[in-house]
Length: 248
Image (cartoon, rainbow, N blue to C red):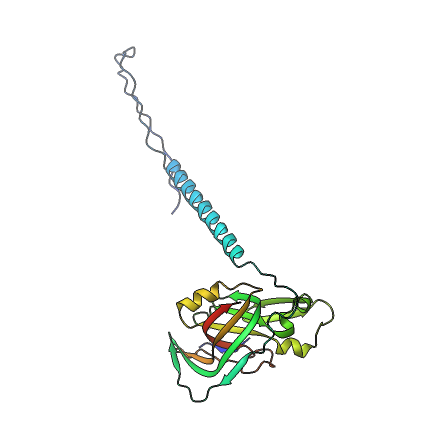
């Protein structure tokens, strides 16, 4: 994970019965008149039923949307073999001026070009940097893009971490796992890139180009990018301002 810092009681129900009946003419044919006031409890019951009906409609719509969203982002399953063989390309940038991105100031550190398999993806909306980084991509290349290797791992993402756990013995050396996979905090350069990133699916081969950046928000919150593929733990994530997205 890349380090980041933040700066009335119920009323009684009454029913009134009014009888209009002359005492002098008890046998009169004049009809008795009965009048009832509406029952407040019944009105409240109708309102309660209305809210319950609206709640179930909303719950159904939410379930349908969630199902559609999960289907749209269902994983893909490429063929066996290393499907993203090339190493990421990185070119250092010295003295590049900062870029204003909303409330954030981004300092370019290096041009970055990567083709990789998406091992996992995770969206964020409530943490300290989600206004800048709406999602993370766990990316793998070389041996970490091969089904025969990946099948030996449980791979997860949460709290801005990407984690891998071997199910048995490691199929490749541990350092190869570290140097051929990374958790990348992706910053959309514009709304079009944001929409493209939001549609990415686990298992896809994606080509991303852009800039690795350090970022500082106007309230003092900051995050720094990794510039190495061989580091691990807190601070080892790439922070990438994504300028182009191509699914292969």
